[in-house]
Length: 132
Image 1 (spheres, rainbow, N blue to C red):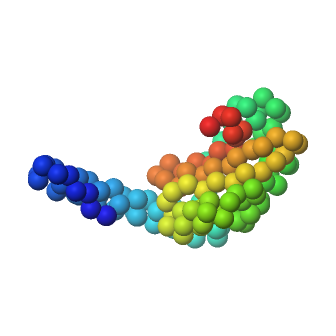
Image 2: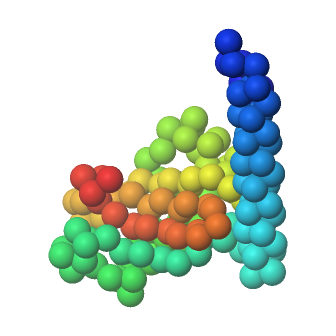
């Protein structure tokens, strides 16, 4: 993708150079995440797991069986109540090793989201939608 900036001839080159570097960085980070997933024999690298304050206040932790069940579904590609378009976005992010992966589940009457930020500091967070 090229960006066209009218009336700023030198600026076009600077913006295009920036975009090229950003894309190269994303590919490099993605390849690293794919390498880690391959080494661990997993579908995708989830990084560090965080449980939100809201879920902790409701009594959940990373040891909660119901959260572990949701994580198991999530890891296997069952993203819960996600529309087809979002599932496609998830799969593209997993294939490239870079981007966001989201899942939505209902536990004990509470809607929760699981989100993995596939980037240089990959983190998976389980949280309540109102904490977004």
